[in-house]
Length: 261
Image 1: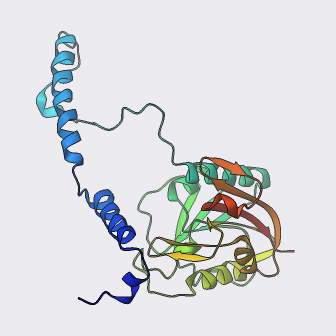
Image 2: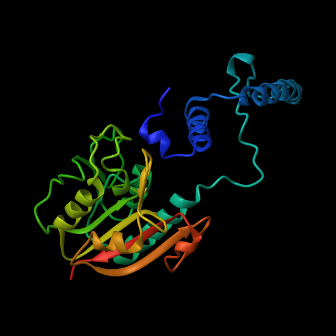
């Protein structure tokens, strides 16, 4: 059987490994259920032990109420380093700037709702947010066609977003220039003197990790925002934040604070 062109460009073992990873992580394929059975057996013994301890307690304990959580016993508190470091960096920047209001395009809803507790935030996204919280409002829109006039937004962010545009991951149409169009639209609406906060994956070369994201070089990312000044840049490599882009470290995440003069 003749291999498709895209498979010829990839080491077959790598393709098989990534396909297995996608199935196991996203759909539960694999043999992790064996570990689950072992932990479930341990849970049954612990249930019996605690039921004896709970005798005479005002809290009713019946089998119909059990809710096994079998993966939470970790040696350290789980932290996803990229979003943890990115969102703390962003929150600090907003707390220092204290804009009258802030507009975000498709970043983490949770992060923006937290920021909204001290600065009003309007989130723009193609998917509605079906929960309400003080200071936080939702407005339907796309990063490719923002519902704002030219140079009208004084405080704007889009964190870990533009690298996905046009890859179809979230149901959008394919567009090889999706990131470039998204960056141009963010630049279009940024007001004079306005602040823009953007983050993207970075690496030693520009590449597409289909259909997860694109990765950018520092030079290419900054070239997407002509006319804007670079106020600050930070880079996440592993579990630490660094002040400078370092291609030798490989894949990371770049955090950029830009401003229109």
